[in-house]
Length: 266
Image 1 (cartoon, rainbow, N blue to C red):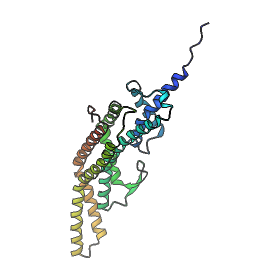
Image 2 (image 1 turned 180 degrees about the vertical axis):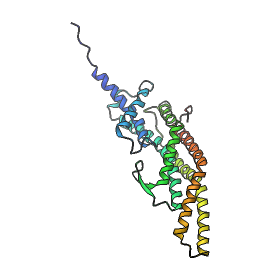
Image 3 (image 1 turned 45 degrees about the vertical axis):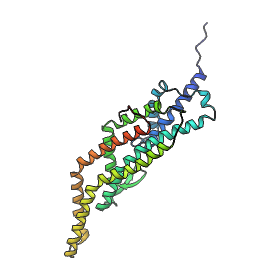
Image 4 (image 1 turned 60 degrees about the vertical axis):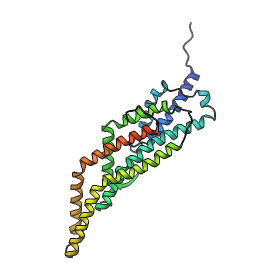
């Protein structure tokens, strides 16, 4: 009788080791990126998404062999892969925080700072306006296929930054600092129309209540401010959505520049 086919355990172990090494960059990116890194995303979903996105990498990228990964020299390579993925995800997260920043400042100016509830993605209480802006930006990001562009850029980064290649942390630090500055600038641009109008309304209410002391600030000014805030948010929706679209494009461009990808869709 012919012998039964046996399972090549050493080869299987080597393939699993290469798969684990390839998942480090993608898994770190999913952990730190917006929409996918929120606490509302279950851990099994993240694991399955990481494995599925890693499968195309196995046949396209020259990964270190099992012997190299079994030695201590693989530790710096693993840390480098994690650093690349975390840096790419954090750049997008910092840029997308401009929406929450704008919503928080609008809520504080309108007197809605107390209207806060638990935000699953942040793990704490945030103003409702900030959560609405964050959800709107996530919707725009997914509607424009920004997640697909981000995944394509990340997969192409294995060609521009292959595993084990020399790693310079300087560009990643500069990208993080630049993303922080861009976050404050975009947040200011989004909130300025509403905040400026609310400041003028508050000045007008102050003058009226000063000239007519019988008008209580809370009974007169608060309803006017709330109504004006809702009207202003409604009127500025087209401009806000346009700013969110530009923010998504800027985030993908910053991600492609960070990972030195010149032919991606971002």
